[in-house]
Image: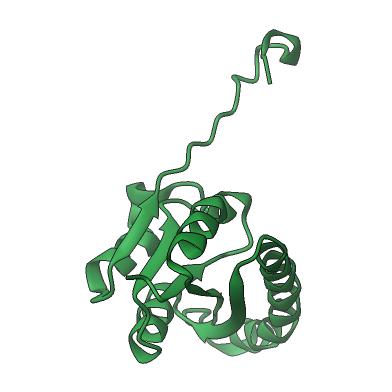
Length: 157
């Protein structure tokens, strides 16, 4: 049913919360999982700022490959057949394009990633759902932060 699953990750803990569900699906359907990270490279302006921004992807790609490699090896250790890739561009556009081009059967991602604001401001997840012809499984993640005025001792882990 889901032979090929695409999992977009942005390097945040929130985005990685999809991984336990992906492991479960991959084991159940004997799926090939592909982890993808998109280094956002558009919209950095012009002039000197644009030149500086062009240098960022090379360093960002190293960081991307490091965290995807770790996540991939963690999934392999759990018995999942997994590959990973880093691409450059606009995240939603690249995710949808990769899924279509590589004939993915499912995209699995969280509603929130690095920004933690998710649906409120028109997130990557929303754009993927809107533009993808591939089914998308979204997992809602909650961020809980106790009010700053309360001491930590009152909160049970």
